[in-house]
Image 1 (spheres, rainbow, N blue to C red):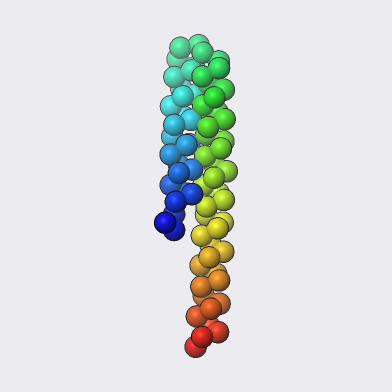
Image 2 (cartoon, rainbow, N blue to C red; image 1 turned 45 degrees about the vertical axis):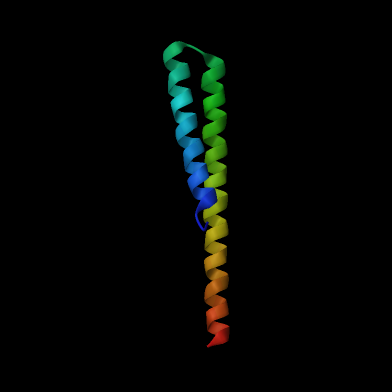
Length: 68
């Protein structure tokens, strides 16, 4: 899937944000820290996916120009 890493990254961001907020509400610093880690991991994965997609699109454009 073209957007797989971006979608998975966004899911981790949401999961992390929920865990962070739940940790803050309950005073559970471990849960809050775990949520922060999940959110950051999601940010990185989404950025990686976006970069990978843009490189793929650029390669496709170059290939089309060469073929025409």
